[in-house]
Length: 413
Image 1: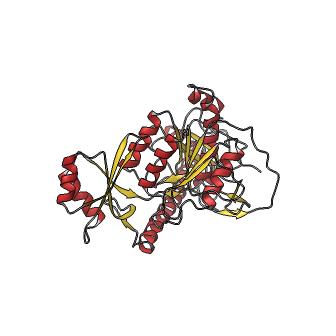
Image 2 (image 1 turned 120 degrees about the vertical axis):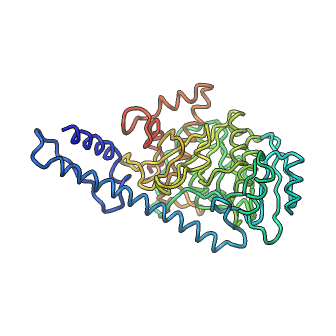
């Protein structure tokens, strides 16, 4: 009996995650009838059910992780003139390294290895300096990282890693009336691609080659923010037409600009690896009181932790569908704060057309809008968000939905 109860408890925890969040399409979750005394053989049947369900979950996570691996390999192959792997295998700008607040000794060590100072940027709003180094021909990024770390182990050295928009497919839908939420006065920053038709902004600036330029993803994020009430928008386009767009240095520059422009909340619907330069910039804006909101990504639970969502103090966001089930593709961060709609919702593309969107990217602007409304209430904004959040899953904070669902009806047009 003790084993049966243990198995039942394990399966109950598993099935607390909705079927769509666990399994690949077409894989059904077995339903266990509620009965009286257990019949003969029930323990064996229950054991088999648990094993089948766990196997399905593992298969789904494996498929999503392999898709991530294939996508990165494809990027490195197609954009090899602009991108190369760093020491961890993550894509980064080819032939460049970043030093965060380096001292004279670190710069001397870098020059001794043949690395050249390309630019030195003093980011006043962030109170940090970033030196961009260029590598000599024949020295790979991964090898340069290793050699410089050996020479200057105390220095914050970062490849200029690429970050990716964390949104899925967009399918055009019929036009409909838009019931916008009451306007929120808080100034909200967006770090993404540029918005397109039908979206008003206070200011927009480009931080990549060919930027600012309208994009479907950036337009969707901005329209969801506007529809949820956040209309005082400042947009930093870190993609433009740049084959190495979304890099860490572009995002750092964007954060510096947004902080100087008075943004109190920033929506960053991007996912990438941990990066020393970006970590320092995120910490700097948080110390200034800026609320940073980011997604857990769409690479599934077996993928590496998502950043910037995993940096301390960032509001990490996952997504649910119209039935309040966690998305099957939702990834994870080192912490989780809230869930918001990220499927069965509509947003504008760059042409100003309504499209159906899916992905944790699209949950981020909805949480950012609620954060912007809460910030207007003063120093208790965190308590205000927690009070507003609707608890899902097991009682209290959990790894599936964080502290609950925000903006429940947002994006449902």
